[in-house]
Image (cartoon, rainbow, N blue to C red; front, side, top):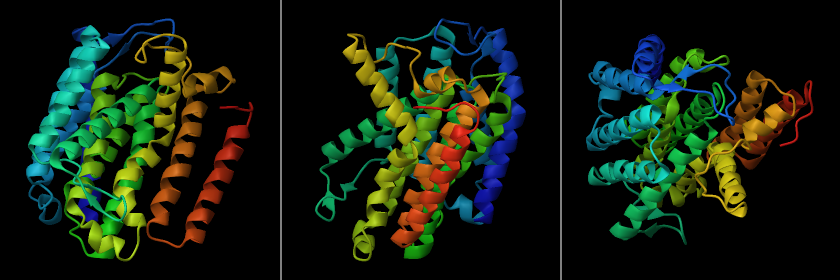
Length: 359
């Protein structure tokens, strides 16, 4: 655990220090978010935050690779995750500068998922009627779908200062706790791609957040949101590959189900926003990728909340879903229910302070 905390701290410190340098280059090369009708920000703001995150991740890998426990996490799958992350960041950098069309970005996301497949990062089984081993082609299809959906869920929620980085940090903490406790409880190796990936992911989010909270001095852009989505999806998929589902399901079905369900649980808010946006646009006869200003964070702002409070409310709702789900995998039902009750109470009280919010 100590080495993973060191990894988190290093990635956070590096991202914090690198981000201002990247911001300068983003302004120099014109990667700047101008003000559009649907935007919340009121001044042109640099993008390319994802480049700072990628640089922090790459340097962190070089620094911690020789640590005894964390070093054992580096394998073929981590190499594939890093290469896929590099591809997705290059795509995002181009989009942040030149505003690529939706189909080009989708093709790039599928390409990044394909890199994961080449390196053996894919869904091998599903918890259906016990455990069902998937044919390679079906597993590869599921892998691409999961990667693309999670990437776009994070991308959709990145519409307000500090929102995506905070939500993904919370999601990463919940997922790291699950992966680590699973290894402790069932005697699996604690050194693996899921723990390493989520530790670095949480670190870069924490390091980036001071530059991104309202008023943001830099946006993560698509380079950042797509990178974070890919890292979270990769952590979930690699965890299923390291776990023997038969060994777990003999004692409890919770840990068998959660490697695939947890990313969707911790991203319940972004996923709900994604589904609502797609349904809303299709109903209006528009492309599901057509932008608008009716996301959840827009509605919170319209109800009279500040950007900081709106982001904090969505942080709390994310934690309210993520942490009880994680607890339920290892603790009795009543402990999970109590955790959920406490978090719901706190979230509702905070939401009702000042303006009343209806989401």
